[in-house]
Length: 136
Image 1 (cartoon, one colour):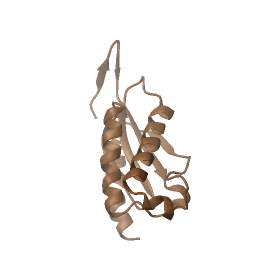
Image 2: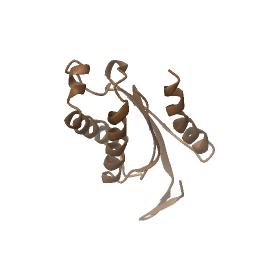
Image 3: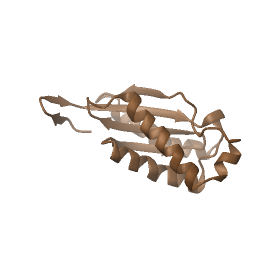
Image 4: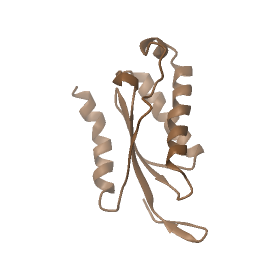
């Protein structure tokens, strides 16, 4: 991710964001996973977030995101999780039954900032999650 410029400031903000399916049910597979990746990229674009890396495993999501200093973390996390759950439940109503009518996402999440030194390591880690999930 390159250094960006705003009005009166220069920045490079990147976040490693991870959240899990409620009760860690492994429902993010096949068409659901494919649709979720499209949905998350769309929501990120609508919220002016840059998706550097994205991986969906059966029970959790990893994203490496670029953001501006004006974007509050709780706001964009809420947008990503809330809108994606609504859109995925709409496209895949069978998930409500598998989750016993529950929410798609656990309310918690993990987020960490990256640096120019950790960017490549985190990006590689996220990209390797798919391979690791296939071995389960």
